[in-house]
Image (cartoon, rainbow, N blue to C red; front, side, top):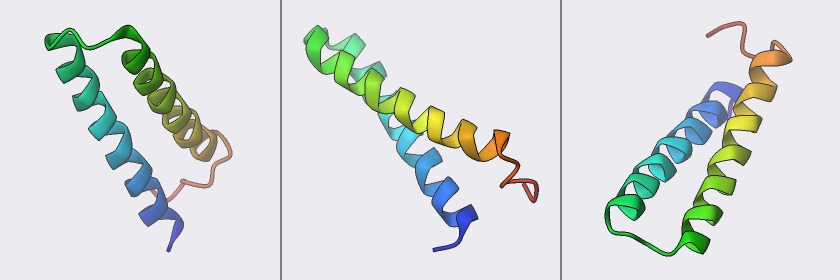
Length: 60
């Protein structure tokens, strides 16, 4: 898997979790589940930021 494919996969997961969070808020899902989703989303965001800051994604 190329770096670009990996980053695209991370970005897709991030967007999916964002949608899950939106649904969780609308349906008044338990705060523990929302907290777990937020933690997963932040981890993915941090990973994406790492690639940007380390200039591994200069191509994009």
